[in-house]
Amino acid sequence: MSQSNATRAAEITIREATVEDLGEIVRQRRCMFRDMGFEEAASLDAMEATSAPFIKTGLQSGSYRGWLVEIDGRVVAGGGLLILSHPSSPRDPNPQRAWILNMYTEPEYRGRGLAKAVVETSIGWCREKGFAWVSLHASEAGRHLYEKLGFRPTSELRLSLK
Image (cartoon, rainbow, N blue to C red; front, side, top):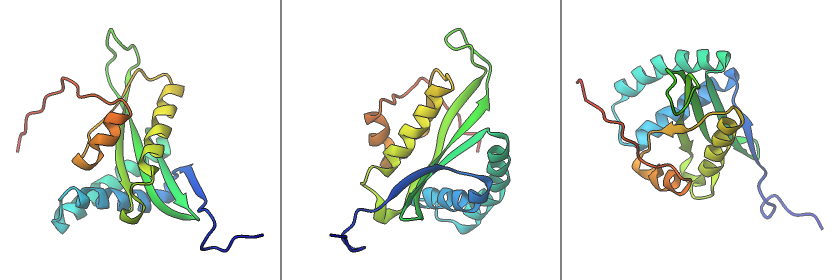
């Protein structure tokens, strides 16, 4: 007996982002910041204008890795990983650091484990490449997920210059 479209399970795919996905990545980044309370259109526009070429260059060079979640062919979530040059330390001789960023899930698809799957994919990629750790900045909405996955606060401090 075949299932109707209404009753069959959705097909979920996580795929690596390409340069052709730049528009979707930038759109998700804007939505992420909007959901965190940044509502001024001019600021969001400026962020898009400077983020798009940065992410494009990163996708081309490999310094930005992204993963998108598709359900039945529609992109509904995603996240990225930024690989930064960084001086090594006695704890880690790798002259690079990995940062998870741009985590976003469409509101109607939240609570289904899609963000967790993207973070786990990012972590797996980092492990495969030999990174000692991966960092991120968490929104209040995402903090619980990251803590459940083992992320812990560090001793990083920040001084606002504006």
